[in-house]
Amino acid sequence: MSTLTPAAPQSSGPARSKSPTALNTGRTLRRRGKARMDPTRNNTAAGIAAWLLALLFAVPVLWMILTSFHSETDAATNPPSIAVNLTLDAYREFFGETSGVSPWPSLINSATASILSTVLVLLLAFPAAYALSIRPVKKWTDVMFFFLSTKMMPVVAAILPLYLFARTVGALDNIWFLILMYTSMNLPIAVWMMRSFLAEVPEEMLEAAQIDGANLLLILRKIIAPVAMPGIAATALICFIFSWNELLLARVLTGVVAGTAPVFLTGFVSGQGLFLAQVCAAAVVISLPVLFAGFAAQDKLVQGLSLGAVK
Image (cartoon, rainbow, N blue to C red):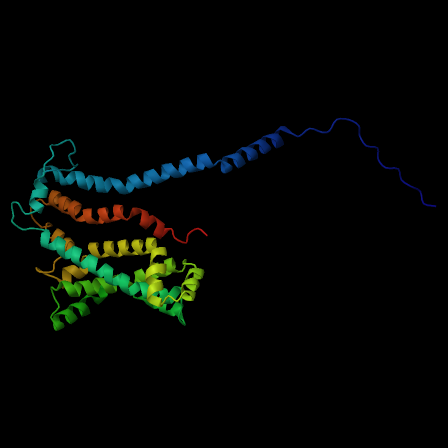
């Protein structure tokens, strides 16, 4: 017979207490876990960081506005003077009160080229985005890569062929040729943006419209366009900003008749004399249309840029 070994008696004494080091480590881990899970603290830190970043970008703009109200002598001091008398001399010079050169033709040219090119971009990009998102064609990824590849080449590499072509066909200093250039410049990015927006349109809405007998143009105009309106507004605003701020094409392809506002702005920079206050005043005036357009379409811009970000 096998001999059974009795089990070891269990201790009836008190359980062994944890060491102080283990207790401190546990408290530290719990405290760190609560700190990570505290949304108020994280939101406060993110808010402070956002305000600091916004101030970092706003300070140069505010400094430019302040400098535009200084005289040329005060604007050229080093370090710059702040507590000085403010004046509107730079704005009077910009609007041609002393020189007689008016900026209005250049501003009108910029508005014409920017608005018309944006309208053409939307008219061309909307059906292209429809074909690439809602009704995708074969090898649509290759098409999208082709659109993207057109933005990889720097504009300065193509400026000489464009200039020679414009001179050959007699399109130099022509606002319509500049509109065509702005349209081709903004079309790829517009197709990319609008494709991502149209991809969020529910297919059930399109199927219901087709069952009711709606044709393609009616679907695009009455169903897809209202649903994707925030994305269309965001695309239009970005194309308008790109066209309004463009300088290289306008500088090379235009002259006196079709010169734009950025080209007029560079005319205040000279190798002699003081021009800082005039340049700041011109920059403030030229920036106002973009700011007004951004504020007017602010809600649509936020909705469009965030469309499809949250499922």
